[in-house]
Length: 150
Image (spheres, rainbow, N blue to C red):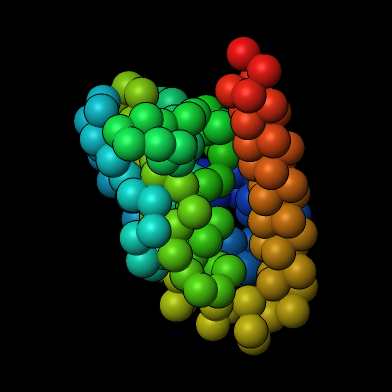
């Protein structure tokens, strides 16, 4: 379990009530990952939402044979792995640790149940996810333009 005061300081959970944060703590864990390790890979099944507690994580996708493009670098406090809450629940990119990291994992099924039963919690989470997806789309577009035009 991740303490509610830790969750409350993370972008994706800002605005949730104390009771809502307590509910999220019960479906959250902290895990450690080593530099170079993949947290998840593109096209893999997305069972958890991730929030970086410490470290840096490269969000990248394959653009050719054995060639990856980094479209975002997640910093402490940022959520990634939004595919866990959007059908078809497959990752659209890979997440690789750029240094040793501590990562908070939030169980998809548990979070979806909370979102289904608490409309305000669901609204806050989906609003933050829309912002994350918008940023990733903009960063991916810029990365692709850079690759095409050198």
